[in-house]
Length: 228
Image (tube, rainbow, N blue to C red; front, top):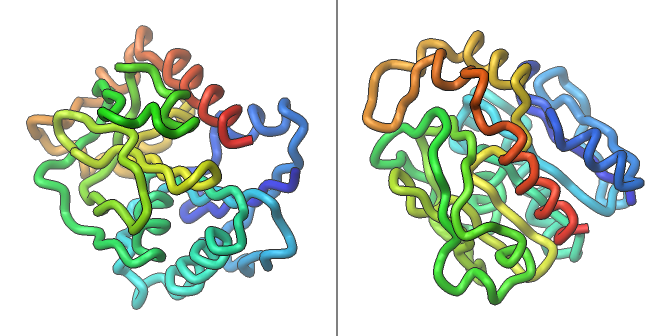
């Protein structure tokens, strides 16, 4: 299957997603929107992945690719393609389908548990989630559920952590693809966002030797298997 990854900043790429997808036999290509790469056409992929980034879905004046990316995501959903959005990517899917994206009541940055939502087992994507698992977070905004979406997960800091639309569309506010190197890059480039807060860990906690990268990536593998 041809997978196209949309990347928004140099320091937030597909991380563990790309090797996992390639190991499963998929062809993976990355479109660097921040570098001026043109958006792919629907005919170029069977699976579209939108990654994270520090910008807001509303920052269309600063980032000219945001509006056409939303149109592509909507077209991909309507065409029945597999679509995965991570953090900003999930917010972009929601916005492209008419849902609102607003400030979350608190910033959520670091390793915090996520819980499967009641009723999530109705979706094969929800069944791929453990009842409770560690995930990496780095966001200040949140999405409302788009029409037809099923809530899959929540955290104490953020009610909307994941949604599914049918069996081929998955939005994740949290990160399960993050590697230690990816976390280091975020800490380096977004250090100003680590101002103390109830749900903000410091650099030492984020990059601790016992941080649950492997556990989170096991959840990623289960979700990819359910999507693929």
